Image (cartoon, rainbow, N blue to C red; front, side):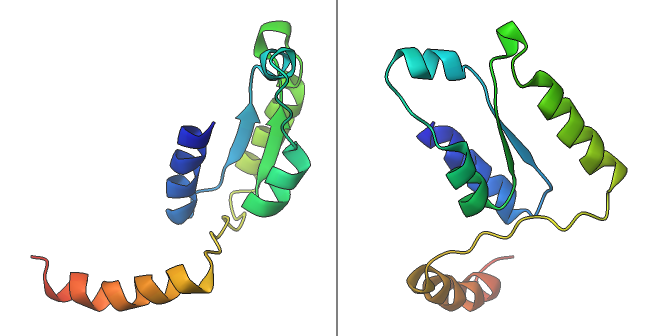
Length: 102
């Protein structure tokens, strides 16, 4: 999941509208893994749908959300809010990168 959240963060930085499908929730539960989808939704600022595609649990929710997003293309994409220390470091790097790239 950590690797997928890294990719999710990269996509969010591109300001793409997105919905996260947490598939195989049954497998996670069987392994004693608890994922708080509501907390992820709040922190990531996008829809998070727990699901089990093999049993079609959550599939209709996913289709509904994606359909609504497509119908409403003026949806404002999520913004990644990094801690101030990271924002400051990025602010210092941007001029350097701009000056030193061709």
